[in-house]
Length: 99
Image (tube, rainbow, N blue to C red; front, side, top):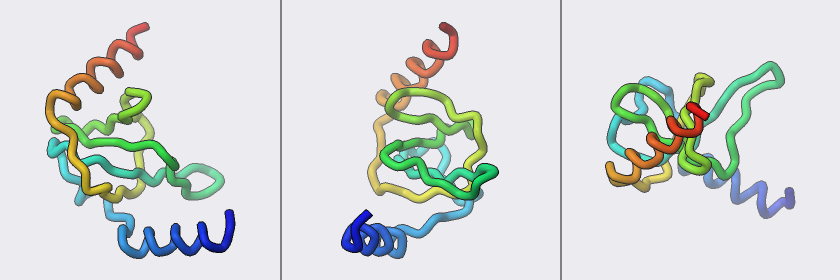
C-alpha cells in the first residue's frame, strides 16, 4: 500500500467511522461494510458488501450468501438496495446453501 493509498483509506475511515451493531438499520436495504474479528485481530472484508434483513440476518451481496459469522461493527455505504434485489440475493443464497 502506498502512502497516498493509506492516506485515502484513513480519510475514508474518518468520514465513515465504524458503528456498533445495535445501530444497524434492519430491513432498509442500506448497503454496508462489515468488520469481523478472529484470533489474529480485526479485519474488514475489502470489496464485499452486505445488507441487514428485517429478520436480523446479514447477507453478502456478491456472491450471494448468508453470513453466519457475527460481525463486530458496520458502516454505511449510503446506497440502498430495492426490496426486489434483496429478495433475489436471499433466494440465491438459499439456493446455494441447499446444494
